[in-house]
Image 1 (cartoon, helix red, strand yellow):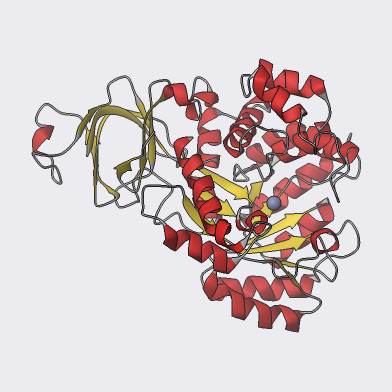
Image 2: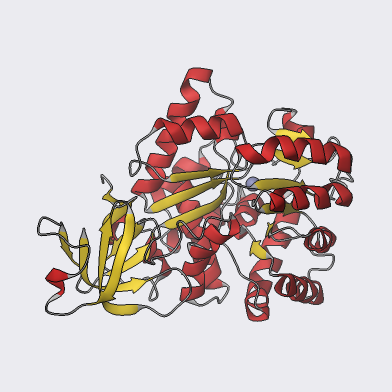
Length: 424
Ligand SMILES: [Zn+2]
């Protein structure tokens, strides 16, 4: 396949390159070069290649949903339905232009079965953590109580045994490092998990609640912080400044999941649904469907609405500060409780990044190359570069003019997964 004369947005944060020919073969980008009159003879091109005219169009890497939960929720279904259900979810993601999805806590066995169940190019790629580590009676055990989904860990020795057993079965490791209810994973255990995972070449992602959790997790050496934290004083930006300086220095990535806190802070608030409609994220019909859900407006365990609103507002104020300090931001949505689809939750996350004042190229990198980097897959997939897996969206409108063009199906001319045109 050759996409001719297209503007490439490669996902690394570099400026767009107009007038490029992009050749795809065997599932990978094999040649990217300026369009010239004689490119019919470009290496890797064949007479029978599918040629797509990219004039006036934009080729961006397919988006990543870098924080969600698939296999964990599927465990509530009868056994025979679990794999088909998650495959269908991944197919729906692909139809929305999201070509990779990271499952941050669930079942390693089901992650593997889902990945082996389908052909490349028919669904979004799945990368998974398997069960997450948590402290004694820690989140989410006190709610769900399912000990196959979380590894309850009280000591460094427990951690070593469990991580050595797990690390070969998963793409990366997720730790709940949440000190809110005094049930946090011991820092010595987190350090052991990081050391063992890094020895095996795997990244470690830490879910946090407070600024203290952020500091301790960065000191333990985690690769990414998941979730914006609850500030001690919402009026005091210095706590964010200190966290940003620490993370920039350590090279720790930051996936704030602001849309999680927006949803948990505004469930039951019809004015919030009106804002989503006004922002073009959902339709009035979808807003009515969300408002009719039994869970709408019900308290969410562990995350009270008022605290979630503080978390949301503080994150929106301080995201530019993290960006300016040099912290690499990553896009992930976590939940779609107050959203019609998981894809719309990711789009809202990108839109919130834009509303917070982040530049468009930074937002695209956060939803592509940075996400791949977060889970240690950026050498294989995550950028439009020669040798990387060919996952891409071809858009007829500039996503740097309006970030919503990335996910709006009206602007998708083609979705490419593993080098194949996806069914639309
Ligand atoms: Zn999560």
